[in-house]
Every structure is written in C-alpha cells, then in structure tokens.
Image 1 (spheres, rainbow, N blue to C red):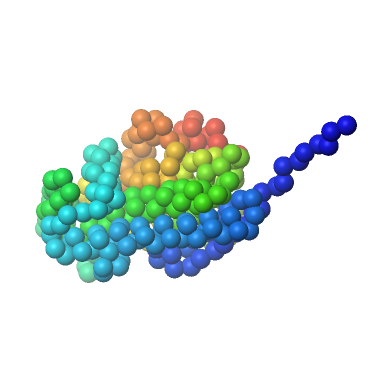
Image 2: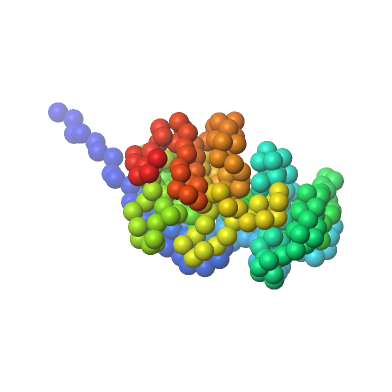
Length: 303
C-alpha cells in the first residue's frame, strides 16, 4: 500500500522594525524553511531602502529631494512613473489628492488662524501646475514643496512584498505604517481601528478577510493630527477616517487619502468606478460602506 505523502507546513517567520520610512514595519513570511524566509525578508528590506532613496521627502539626498532643489532634472524610471501616476490620481480624485498639500499644514503651524488672503493665495498655488514631464526630464513648476507619501508608501509596500515573493516566499503579509499588502493563497485577517474610540487599544471598528490585496486607512490619529482639503486649503471637518481595500496597496493608499477629503457619496461613487471596497467614518460617527467592503468584512461594529 503506497505511503501517503504530506506536504510539510510552511515555515512562518515574523519580524518587526522601527524607523522604517519613519514608521513601523511588520513582516510575516511563510516559506519552505528559515533560509528562504530570511532571504525573503532581506529582499523586502533592501527594496524598501532602495525606493526610499528615490521617493523620500525626508532624506535630503533622495532623488525627489535633489530634483526639487534643482528645479529641472532627468529622472529615474521609478520616479517618472510615480509622478505620472500622481498626475492621474489628482485628476481622478478631483484634486483631493495633491502632492503639494503639506504646504497647508505648514501654513497652519505658522499661523493657526491664517487670513483669507493667505488661504486664497495658497489655494491658487495648489490648483496651479506642479510639474511638467518631457520624456525623462521633469520641470518643477511650483515653489511649494512636493511629497508623494500618500502614494509612495503604498507603492513601496507593494514592491517590498513582491521582492519577498521573488526570493522564495510562499506568502507575505506586510504592514508598513498602516499600509498593508498581502500576497498568498489564503485569506488573512486585518483589523480596522475605530477613529472615534477613546484609546489605542479599543476593539477594532471592523475585521476583514483579505487575499492578494492592499488595505490602507487614513484619517485623524488618536494624537489629534488634522486633515486638510487641498481644494480649499482648509481643515477637513466632515470626515474622520477612510479605509480602502484594493488590488494593491498603492491604490488603497491614495484613495484612502482622497476619501478623507471628499464628500462620502462622491467617495462611494469613486469606489465603484475603481472597483475597491471602502469604509468611511464621519466625524459625527456616521459610517458608510459599499458592497465590495461588506463582502470581505467578518465584523463591523458600527454601521
């Protein structure tokens, strides 16, 4: 009688890092054994470091920083592609995503009660062209500082997870400061924090099952960070938080940012256009979601 052959269970490797892209990184890798798992982890970390040197708005010698200092430069394919993607998302989100939006926060830090003239001048600057791409050459057209964080962090999470898979991982679950990317054959559980809870350790607002997808949540933090609307240069008052489930973390990242700014009904309409799930929480506690999100939700405490 032939012996039954059992495939060995994949080896599970978990790692946690502080200070990666200025945030935390949690990585879970399933592989055939420790050697393959550590090779996958090393590949993921190397890809994050490589892309940080291109996209970072904090490193003074990143490619993004050097281009902004020079005003015109020939760019790498990676930075060209991200700028083109940013152009598309600015249009798709009706200006709710804007790489120059950090200038609003800077204004309010300098003056918590800016004048109408200051707000209108900044609003006009935000609506103007930010850059022009001509082949490999990029011309910076605004004096405002540019950050691609609301798109780049999700993109880096995607690339880091793919790098781990390329080195023999069978499954990857990566959480880069709240940008989650899963690649693998089995669904995994992901929690969504409640933005209106009084404590960091409060029960999650929702629990999801995700598989080969990205998840991102944007909004107010427990520490009181504010949101700003690039269309008006004023603080956001209606929305508290937006969570998006998408085929990749970059899409989830940028849409979660935009959905914190847009009116809920417009966000729900855009979610259908882009085929993503979303959970929207208004400042007064009202919650909105769509069928794609509900399909993957195991639990939603307040709906």
